[in-house]
Image 1: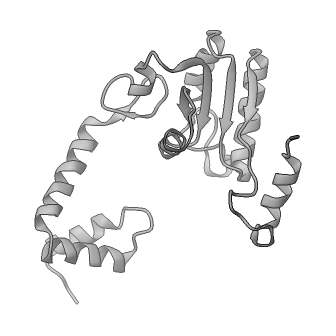
Image 2 (image 1 turned 90 degrees about the vertical axis):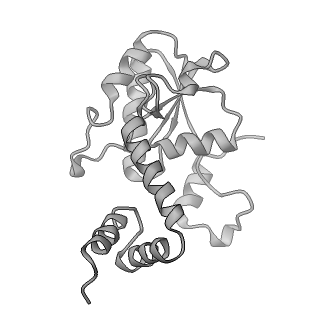
Length: 198
């Protein structure tokens, strides 16, 4: 069936979102047009505003409407601690769920030579001067436990050690409340390898 051109454009535009296929995009478009045109207008305005005004922090590469994000501007944060993460979503998760009070550096990905993602694409050239400046005493590597995440962590650990910066890695393993019988082999192996003394 042929839809109106504007509806086709809306459905196609909604498909750019992760996890949104043709049917989901169609349901979203119909919902906005049938039941929530006002919500659709707010959504359109918010998206337009965000795309026009939100950029990246010049220091940590987090999303920001100013040259420096609120975390980098804060005098309450510990400049000696630098947590390196793969995405802005990781910063949000750490901020919402931990008492971490240091600074961040957002890679916007992880090393993946097959996909053409090397150190330059991850902004490592922006990270090195921060390590060279001498303010950072410890770098906390909070990349994922994928093969690419581990390779990225190892690469960054080597960079930090060359500059006499202490390196730590977030723990990976059995989730809180998890039952061992349901944990996959890789996670269980990592949990045993990274065990700590009590």
